[in-house]
Length: 150
Image (cartoon, rainbow, N blue to C red; front, side, top):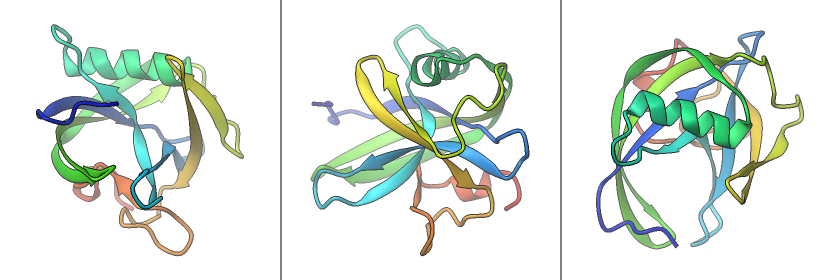
């Protein structure tokens, strides 16, 4: 169980595929109501770690790949409800590429994030961040102004 009693600092990355048509996201589900969503790859910044170091580490842990050519797109503040509890995070959002290329299969795949299984798939770059009939909403909130032109 995650402690949401304080503001968390996170680092996440926008990872477009080689064709520039899709970007890698993990699929999450809120246990309180089953609402599914997409989230950028990444996670928490650890004490003594810079955000850029955290996003490189998170990509290595989650995708078993090396993040290269990373650049900061901006910072978003996200206040949300998950599993019936309020959460608050400040997220450093990066863009980058993987040294190994498109490690996520076209149909998506399961990855092990330090013992926690997660499904990663490709989201169309043109999909609205709020989601539509074909795509899930994309989190964290506030990405619309940071991501490349859609």
